Image (tube, rainbow, N blue to C red; front, side):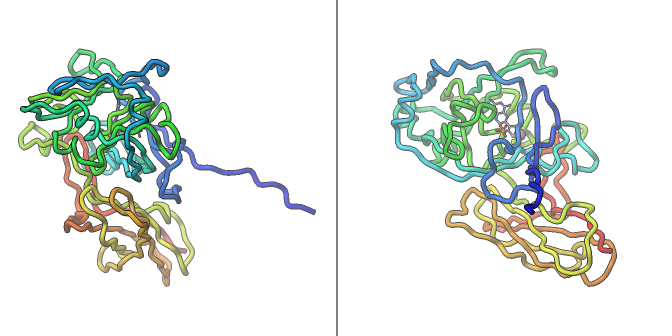
Length: 356
Ligand SMILES: Nc1nc2c(c(=O)[nH]1)N[C@H]1C(S)=C(S)[C@@H](COP(=O)(O)O)O[C@H]1N2
Ligand SMILES: [Mo]
């Protein structure tokens, strides 16, 4: 007699809000280093744009020698680049700040990665030429809506300093995991800015403009700014590079385990250099041991999976920590850098388990 067929059980996104759509990747249940688009977190400021793809043109204007209006075919004909990139929302882990901060209460799943293919932005700008005095490259999205704080309608637009825009790996992507980019993630064209928090990776590109001044759109001058003080805007500075970070995927927080052998597993990533070390503590930070890391051929912009074999000898409660260090010497701090809008959380990761 054959066994009754088991239904397939799959993880889902975790919903934070529906209008606009904000959903988390079930990061604890991601085993691959490539996240399928259905499980890729979704972070939107507005409702989805209404685009007509049949007639898509990309204008590049401003301080360029020859403004361009490119078709999808023009782009597809240019030399391409394929990169595995981690995208992390700067609000990832915001819910862990204490005191708590307002905003989407992301837990640990505002992060995903996969394979992006596109044309380096530098190749496009070489084609148009850059005029003297160029300072920043503004990328505007098709989505728009009213900002309640400003009583005005804005598109989602951000700029990059010219050096970052010309970095060979900053690209105008048209494929995710070898398919056209899924609509919710920016079809047909999306900016991909490796090493920066993902607000920089503008979806549904409408226009690229080179400017000779500092762009001051609200998604850059009001949001995505670290405000260290609760009371005022003193010492504010922009959110850019991803901080070194790690997340424990297994066991789950507040799991009940047996004594004996267990694998502690997780991921670690950084926006500067590469992750060189992950340490695990099973005694709330009194002692640390090195985790094993799975390196692949090119670790430049991806997370590294790590594991640590743990033998629980005694029943009781345990606080398990993970701490990553990167090649620039940055390491996860014991306490987060609190800031009013809750960006860039990267304190040592922590779960609790009980053995009985
Ligand atoms: N056009 C546009 N681009 C955008 C956003 C947006 O709301 N509109 N959100 C940004 C933010 S804050 C993040 S974290 C990522 C989320 O990308 P995803 O929805 O593909 O995960 O896109 C960025 N690019
Ligand atoms: Mo974000």
